[in-house]
Length: 119
Image (cartoon, rainbow, N blue to C red; front, side):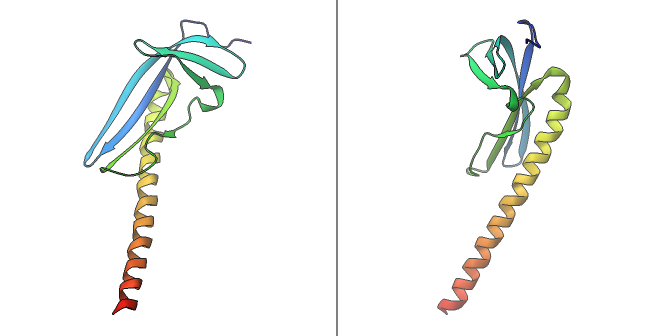
């Protein structure tokens, strides 16, 4: 049961936050093969990737840790859903920053408590 033809193009939208700069990057991928579980897709230059159907239109963290003041996430989607995915990426990164701020506050509280016990 194929839902797309071989000329179908997917896009990968990536949102990257580095210090005080936020950028979107979009890359087109061409459908090579569709099975009941996944799509095999390929960019204009690069290797083939297997994209499982349940991962289409899903935001994934590209950076698992916050280091060097950078965070990024991305999603594969159909071109007509690009604007929606961009909004979801912005919300995802904002939520990730809030979580990191809370974790850092807990760490700061623990250090202050330890500091009070030492003196």
